[in-house]
Length: 432
Image (cartoon, rainbow, N blue to C red; front, top):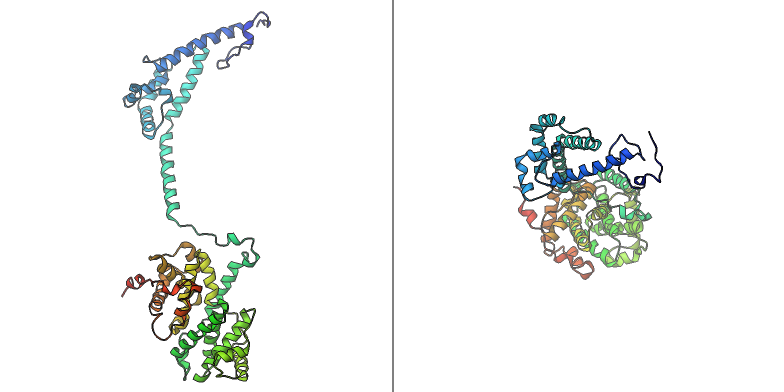
């Protein structure tokens, strides 16, 4: 092939297109073919937009009568928006008409022009893409996505309640699940028999209720920690189910149990003289110390049993509680501490039921989230029996002789929680 220098061939300095094949850069014949192809391109573009159809397979898209609305609106069929309905029409049209007609029209496409060959290749690609059942795939994908989105919306997520305390060493995030798993195992074999009063010849459940109601007021006057009160009640019940006590020594048992709980939980422990003054000097110092020895030996110095308080703190965190919910939950569970019949429930169940009942009292409807159910391991149905009993205690809290808990939570220190209305609707839904 003859090569031409740059000076004799001015077309070499112009940009060229490599859409066609069979030419060499710098050839005059190639430059002439480019001009011819450019004219053919203008004709093709004119025919695509205009009313006359160009003898090419591309124009077979206009054979469908369903798409006449696009031509009446003078919309460019090349840039026609693809919708689901339109794509389905294209797919059905291609299956009925395109294959046979494209075979007939394929030899009529001029092949002498290199640019025409390129047009035919593009048409085959467009035809293949149109024949491929893409619209059906898109419809199935959309339906699958809609189903998945519905499932995600309906399913309530479980909140990670320990994520915010990852950098707090006191929260022991690495071991907190193991700790509460251990508490669950311990409460299974450390539960107090709910009928131990049958073994006590001189005391009954009413005397126990009077003692605990009085100790709740003493606990509040000394401004002790919450753990101390729950451990005090636990020590009393565990001691009474193993040791027979006369009526005159019952108050002494309560005072010594609080003294031991303070030594276990508090930083500043009340002295023995203060406890004697509270009892109106009904007991001497010697009697207090002797009862302390007897109680520790009876319990074998084991004071690490889980109380409802440890579960209350965990479940309140799972409920993402505020002060109102926290005060009302403790108000309900302290009412339950006074009642002897509540010993039949495990400490974790008492804590979960108190929080559930407080939710219902504050918001006026049943509310027990998946997060609370996950961390407490109790469903809403499992809490209803205990919750209904707490609602009854709430209604009678201000009546009768045992009103220590109501007076405690009726102060500004606890946000006047005792004035909150009870969730009576839980009693109405009770099945006969």
